[in-house]
Length: 130
Image (tube, rainbow, N blue to C red; front, side, top):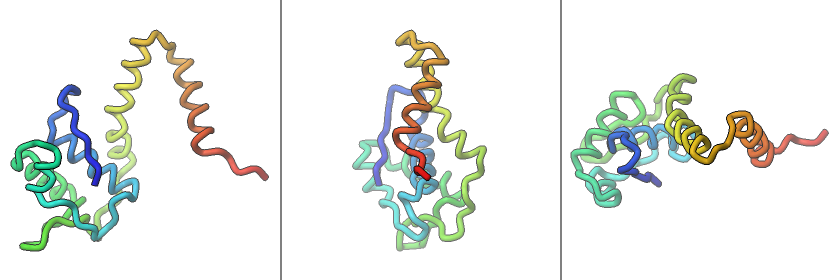
């Protein structure tokens, strides 16, 4: 499970963990029933307090994204509800904000940024030719 923490973006670490796990589940990179790392293992990997990871896991459990099995670990929920459109957009908001701020710092106009996004989209997801 690939999670990257940034101490410079102002978002609490536990929220970063929650958002990234939600993203991994929504994108299919974490499947229903798949075990996620134990709290202490992830805390060591991210060099954060186990309490921070425990708080993130509790948030994920309350959201129905993961379930805890007593003595067996924490797993992606089998029957988790798919993220709503609103939740998916909320996950993209921090990256969108960062892109907008960076483009402003680089003096790239919003219209140019939209063109760049469309070009990149077409490159990554080419349309099938008839």
